[in-house]
Image (tube, one colour):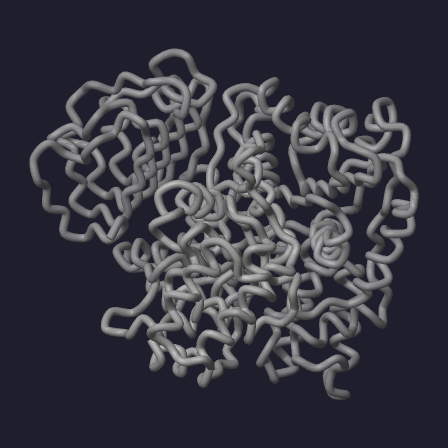
Length: 634
């Protein structure tokens, strides 16, 4: 043990924290009950938690691994139980925690049915344990352990008492909320270069009258590509810490052509507010009641980005009635009339119109994307100003046009590009965005862009790359080009992101070959001409109560590469033979799969990615199947 302690106190690390919280505990006392429940709750809240050694590399000594974990942790939860001090390992761990984290609000002691004064004065079981250790360890060790126990006994934390009727689950929930506040402030991704964003967020802050203790809302309005989402994210990142709870809800998935449901938005709200990995709202009323429980006593910031107008109309009024004093709602929309509708239900609602950039800011933004400098070279200044004038101060157009000219040093190319722009009406921003699409390679880059817009926004890049490779789209070449043309970005989680306006352009361009169907999906497919040209299909059957799709219908989709079926709440009886379907299928997602296993005849030979989610699904096939290209799941 002396060697271990020397290792723990002699080594230092300067790398950034890799864990949110470190759990220190004596396993025999708490591992199977309190710690198991606490770890589960922390994990559900997506808090990266060190417990024992699940993440240590094989072959690494535990002392070194623990030391790295302690130095790589933002916060500590120390569960002090009756036999904690009987473990020299726990005591050494505690010494190191206190030595490397003297900022006391980062250590949360849990006095698990022990008296804190026993730690401070080494009485009871803690005194007995130290007396036992005196026979085996030097005075230096004993003094360090005494000092550590006395110090943590002085800290405020959570005290579970044997004669109290306090529920352990309530304590665990409080600990999770404490950890969340201290370690897990959400910060959303922003563009790498922005102009005029600080004064805009400050203006919105002033309009919201943050010093007033009432409930207020503000709508960020403007034309497509003007920067509504960017403004909302910048505000969220800057001011969300002033609220007890906060969440940012964005419209990532295109809605079906049938009824627009409030359930997905309620689901997102509850997942983010509860900090759960998953949560299913069975109906709107139960979702609203759960929201009320969360929001009734907490100052909240709710940001809703580009949701469907019918959802706004229903959701804003309900949210306003649930929020407690000091809460704020921010929503983005292209429709100014939505603000007028909101005033019927919300008395304190304001509007912020995102205005076009002035010429100086526009030139700076355009120049950054074209030249990576704030001012254009003198030889290109006049042409740059003409592009800026054409863009009309719309940030997205400035970004896309500037990026399309990056690295182009031939003046004649610039003039030709400007001439091409003149053939498209200035107000048609979508057509401006489409210029970058027009420059893509027809055989690989264009279909890859359409696939991403339709099927892979918010999905993992590596999975998509494997699928595109199987289609001979050469994604290692094409994806960087899509990023360079500002048609696509990849976030820090390695997931595809696409501006909503650009995505809508892609959905419109691919509407004849990539379909999103709901409601009467089966009838629509039966009556569709050129069904063999369909390459992508999303079937939203969550609101359907009758059988829609048969194997016969799916068998007509001879060129189908991408398929998603969403049927969370209703079983769909597709019982026919799958033997002659899906010869070109590369990716399949089936949410709400209705059987225990797949049909034996279902064996798409080119399948790369398969995602199945269902309470009923037990195995993919009764008998082993070999699909040569299948990578996901690994």
